[in-house]
Length: 137
Image (cartoon, rainbow, N blue to C red; front, side, top):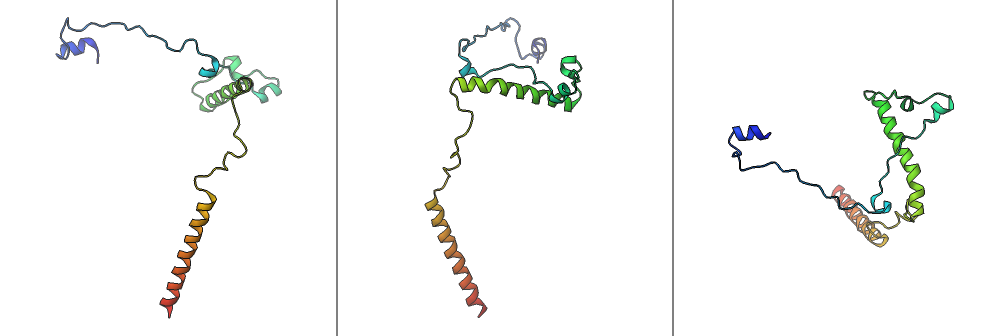
């Protein structure tokens, strides 16, 4: 809704409202890269294009925004290049990039609890089977 339309509809009274440009303050200007984790990279080189000795469409300026596959490959290669550049930086700052080997070892339920559940389930099945046997007679 624009200003003139609002006045004509009576939603705003003339002279009571003034447009003011609010200055924006940036809070985190001086943060280290480890805190921001921001990177802007060009896409990684196309392996097949380079192997064939051709110039890629991106560096050639032939990127067609309407070609979904080409656009997705561009995003994929850009993400790939960012990962290749970010991993050494993360390792340099001692930030873990791989899960520990025993990552899935700590389950939601302990082994003891699962054994208890299995025993109860087994007892329930035996009871049901014996009831079915009594009903057959």
